[in-house]
Image 1: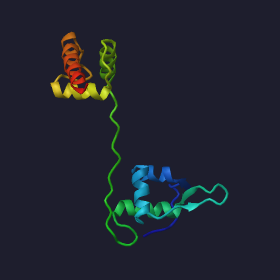
Image 2 (image 1 turned 180 degrees about the vertical axis):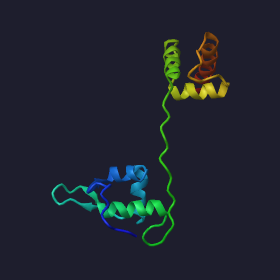
Image 3 (image 1 turned 180 degrees about the horizontal axis):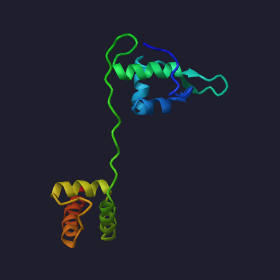
Image 4 (image 1 turned 90 degrees about the horizontal axis):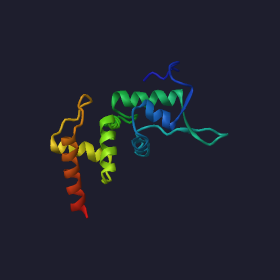
Amino acid sequence: MNTSLNPEHPTICTVTEMARTLRLSRARFYQLLKQGILPPPVYCLTTRKPIYTQQLQEVCLHIRKTGTDVNGRFVRFYNRRPRQRANVEHKQLVTVLREMGLSVTAAQVRAALDRLRLPKSHATVFDAETIRKLFQYLHERCQRAV
């Protein structure tokens, strides 16, 4: 492994920045630290905060790239899941349904659109029939939950 200093990496970085660079969640990063797969950070003497030097950053990047740790064990890395953002239409539907007396979220509306096989593209204009079907479906689910 080449441990020469790489100018494209910062001199030091925090644990959060290192996790982001490796495309891992902080929880998974700490899990790999605990298992001894990733090298532990060094601690700044003045602030007592964990940091990664350029050399430790390169070791972490090498482990991520090759999928093997320093002891030769194989490691599985998963990428972070992208967050799903609610469409503007979903937000509008949530507002309309809330005004009609339902307490719903954008995720519930998205699931109902999927379940009812209703169109949910950006080009779709939600008409009264779509809102009626959604209201009936979500209202029935609310009644069953009570």
